Image (cartoon, rainbow, N blue to C red):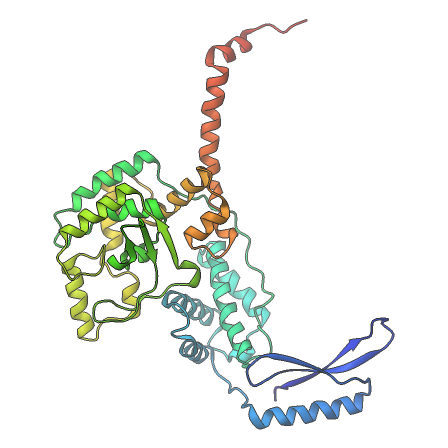
Length: 396
């Protein structure tokens, strides 16, 4: 039977003596330590047993569960507190772990299982970054179980993430952005026309993610202050529930030109439609599904159908082989950094939780700096000057 109270020792300052203390978790899952003030092992053991009995009167020992049931239990406990995207990633990672080590008891998961999982991810063809991401989700699931008192310690706590080289940040050039915007006209006559040109321009100016843009309502735009707000949405008759992380809640500036375009777009829309970038016909279909109880929080993350397919057609029309919509966000962040904004400022505007995430965008900036340095060297030295040096005889 798993012990709820552990007996530990703490040495004195001079290192010559020690005293016992009790280490346990209270009814709220918080770790507590009580010094016993002596070094008598027999007395300390009796005190440990007494505390163990007290806790067992109020604390039920977690039952044994296989990993599939453990996942279901964890998702049920955290639903509503964690974003749907995160829950989906938790599920995907745990299901992969089960395929690798089997649907064993969650209390029997070991450090070795974690190492086997990493190797299985790499053997499957996952990149080191993807394998590391899956491991982080698994660690989080087990850590939550530790916090709830279901486990003594996280079995994957010390499993190291595979090393991965920093990936190049793909951004669009000014010419590519212009070609993409011209190519959006190709989709204007679709049955459900999406304002692709405005969607792209706002993303390029604010670094907003796709889900943030598609869940933007007219009440999020302050035309007088020339700002756009990224904020969660409540479930109402007109809006569906949409949640974000605390760090994602932010207010972003808009240019005069974009404010003008948004005002024109609003004037062209029928009254009563709250979402800026959701076409009226699509909104009506969503409302019908909501009335029929067929709409979920997950559906609200990306409420436009065939988004990637349509954007792929735009890229094809623009003659661009590589790219995705999220690259507009990367382009905007790189532009901010390149034009002198401080890293902390960019972190706050982008909704990043840490400097590490923002810092990787310096890679794209450095690439442009190298190009500009080459042009500057060429202008300073000149082709004739270099050629003259190469032909000049060595001096005595």
